[in-house]
Image (cartoon, rainbow, N blue to C red; front, side, top):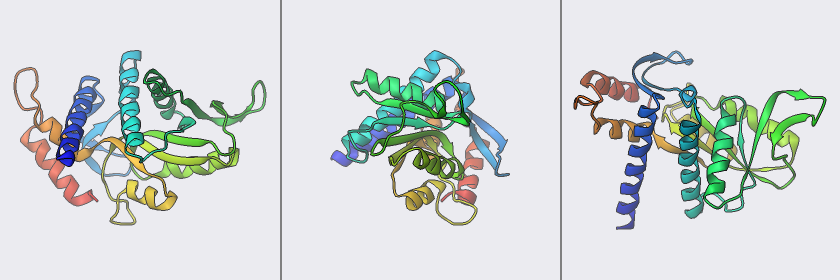
Length: 238
């Protein structure tokens, strides 16, 4: 019974997040050529969260996902700081930290500079400074290959002997990597040993969108887009 309740809550949360993505015009359906060369039937643009209301709401979704994971003992209660890699991760870390603070958990934020500063406060990091033993939670938008994580981890470890306790994404595309049949998310989990969570995954997003209609009452997802999504996941899904 508890599992059924959790599944319903997850579906409702994914539906709420999908509606938010659509209203922010961050989620688009159609045909999009990705950096990988794959032609995707959908695209999530983090640059669409371009004002205080949108980025604040996005931070709330990240915070809710983190708080649920803490409650389920997937993430530790004593996270010291949320780290967002420059540049897209910067507003994610800040807005998530603010939302967590508003929920009664005082957690810092940290992000990196692209180049080390040799004047003023100096260093590579901005915000909560990293120290040995700190628990650091990573946030990012959408993972395609895990390249950003592999760049960030050694950068953090070079600053201090921190413990990276997990990574939270806005969406899990659930796609296999070029080199294996497992997803980029699963590959990162296996390589680094920390949990990788998402606000929603692509299956949840499409399931939610399939139940929605546009302003004229027509189904939001056309049959063509739905068929393209099925074919895409058959080909690239992990």
